[in-house]
Structure formats: C-alpha cells, structure tokens
Amino acid sequence: MVGGEGVLYDPDMSRYHKLIVAGVFAVFASLPLSSCTAQAPDTVTVEQEQPAVEAEAQPEQPKKNPNNTVDWGPNRGIWRAEIELPGGKALSFNFIVEFTRNEDREPVWDIWLRNGAETLPAMLENQNPLNIITFPGTDARIEATVNDSNTALGGEYIYTRNNAEGVAVEYRLPFIAQCGDSRRFAWIEPGEEPAEFGPLADRWVVSFDERTGPAVAELVTLPDGINVVGTVMTPTGDDGQLAGSYEEGRLRLSRFTGGSGILYDGTIEPDGTLIGTYRSLAHHAEGFTASPDETAALPNLFELTKWNDGVELSDLSFKSIEGEDVNLSDVAPDGSARLVYVMGTWCHNCADATNYLKQLHERYAEQGLTIVGLAFEASTDFSEQAEAVSKYKEAKDVPFEILVAGQRNKSEATKTLRALDKVAAYPTVVFVSPGNEVIAVHQGFVGPAAPVRHAQLRREFEGRIESMLVGE
Image (cartoon, rainbow, N blue to C red):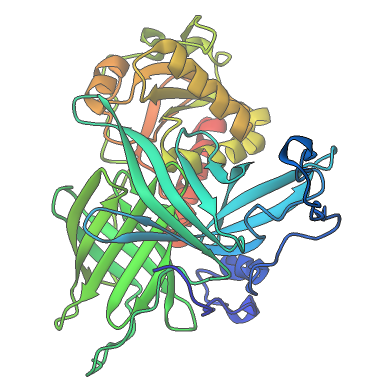
C-alpha cells in the first residue's frame, strides 16, 4: 500500500563520499522531502452560491477558469508510486511533480522520474478529472484520476509489447501513487522474532533461470543502512540505475523509465545466498540466485563478437531516414577513423551509449573520427522505423548519422548486417581504422550506473580511438 510519512533520503548528502560514488548521490540533496505542497493559490476563482430561482430562469453557473485555478491537479512535490505486477509484487518508483504556467497563464505540470541519481522527464496532460502521464520516445502512458485533496492518484499504467510471434499485446496494470512519500518501497515490518542480518555485500555474481552467461551486481548501500543503489551487468549491457532498499534480509531494487520497468525482489538465505525473482513489467519473469563475490567480473567484451573475414564496409548499404541508400564506405572521407554503432532507439543501454558517443563526437570529430549508427527497430515497416530514428535523433540531439538498418530481432539483424558473426547485443560498436581495417568489436555497453566498470570502458574506448587517429 502506498502512503506514510517516512523519509529515508537524508538531504545532507555532502557526507556521502565513498570513492566510487563520490558526487553521484549529491542529487538527492535536491529532493523535496517535505509533504507535497498545494498549487500556489495566486488567483483562485471563488464560486458564489446562486439564489433559488425558477429552473427555467436559473443563470448558467460559472465554470472554473483553467487560467486561474489549479485546485484540480496533482500537488507539486515528491510522490511514491506502485505498478502492480503479476504475482502480487509491486514495482515501486518515485517521481517529482513540478507546476508552472505558460505564456498564456495556463497551468503546466511536469513530471520527473527518479531512479537513484537518475532523473528522466515525463509530461502530464490534465483532462480533469483524468490525468495522462506520457514519456518521451515511447507510447506507454499512465491514466489516473486524483483524489479530492490532490495528494493521491489511482488508475492504470498502459504499455504495448510484441509477443514471441511478433503480435503487439497491450498490458494494463493497476497504478497508485501517494504525494509526500519519498521512500522507494513500503516499510517491511519485522517479525515477532527479528533475525540478525549482516550488511549487504557490494559485489555479487548473479545467475538467472533463463538467461545464460555471467552477470555481476554492483551495489552501494547508503549510510542509512537501508537505501541501496547500483546495477546488474551482463555481457549484453546493464540494467541502468537501480534504486531500492535492504530491510530485514530482503533486497528490493527497481528502475522505471516510463517505457520500461524492472524489479528485483530477493531474500537473503541463512548461507548468505540471495534468492528471488526478476520481473520486467508484466511480460517477463524469472528467478535469480546471487552470491557475494568481490572478484566477480564480466568477460572481456572486446572478445565476444567478431567481424566476418571478407566483408568490407563497401559491401554494406542501408537507408537514410529519407529512404536513400547509403554505403558505409561513403559516410566518412577516405582515411578517416570511424565507429559503426549497432543500436536501437528502444534500447536503454543504447541511450547510455548514445550519450557517451555524443561526447566522443564532440571530442574527436575535428581530429578525424566519424560515427555512424545502424538502427534496428521494433517495427518491420520502414516508415515507422525511420520515424522512430528521426524522433530519437531530435530528442537526444544526436550530431552523427543514424541509418535505418532493419528489424531488431537478433537473428534477422545478423542476416541483414552480415558483417558480424552474430548480433548478440544492442549496442555493439565496431572500431574501423583510417585504412578501413576493423581493429575491434565491443559487445554491449555498461553505463554510469556501474561507475567502476563504466570508467574502464571509457578508457578502453578512448585508448583505441586515439591509437586509430595517430595511425597506430
């Protein structure tokens, strides 16, 4: 159940100075931790009671003027929300409501999703009494009504996902939210005989019931001993910024981006093993087991995907968003170093990678580096693929070319691309020297949610780029 007045995020974050996460959690200082405030009563229309008259002579009642009244929208401040998942679990997350007025003095509500130090924008359209929250780059939405005090929302989270047969399935999941509650998850009441649990380990080796290959969890427990942030990394990428709590031997971590949502819910066993369930909204669930391991590490991600011998850049052509054929050998002047970036606009790891590649473009473009993206999209229709890429480039202000490569199914993408032995992960980055020699292929992407591994990735990428630029 959503509610309560408990506050776990300490606003004095200056003392959170662990080496790995120094500065990352300072953003918590800006959280509005007090109870949600009502909208500013700057010009509220007061409706006077009308005198009793004959029905046919009764004047039309004045209506609330949306330019002047804001007493029918969600209050500004921090909220805690729950999306009910199958199996009785709740994907909890936090969001901030901000209220402003546009040039016409009409009310505008902005939403900011919070996952640890991560902040993501959303928009709220008020169709009193219905409130519709939408998320950039996705068709997912929340439809909810607000209570009389504007401090609680109730409704549905709605999203669409293709099933194994490629058929789009719409999911509608119960949604509730409470204003003034900064916790990530509801409190866990201790049992009648509380057990003793030690501190949560920082690093874990993780195995899943269905997915193959190694996985590593990198977690940080905040000084209150309850709040936890971190991520889970695999050879194809990471889960992004997870946030949650560790109480009474139970670890709950979640991330909600609007278009996607994941939940880890596990319990520490007597032998120290963590056993639980991983859920991706309503369309996927599987068990996981994790064991503390300070030496846990991913394999070398430069050694997992290979470029096929005999395939040249000039053998590969894809369409621009305008529908024109573009040969990969023509996307940069002769003698240029380049990165060929296999990605998708739907992929959260690709979003992290795109942000980093924009930095690389800014740093190295004048020295001769060219980046070209190859987008593999959810749709099979070119016009829909091109539209998704166009919106993505505009929303993220991408300065380099992204071509439309095909459908995101990995086996189909492998056939379409032909140059890689397999498309195992989105993203995958190919390093091509000025002499058109493929010198490296990097599978997957570990983002800033795992700061140590991300810093290592940046060193590896930039070292290879600089070597290519000087002709080594």
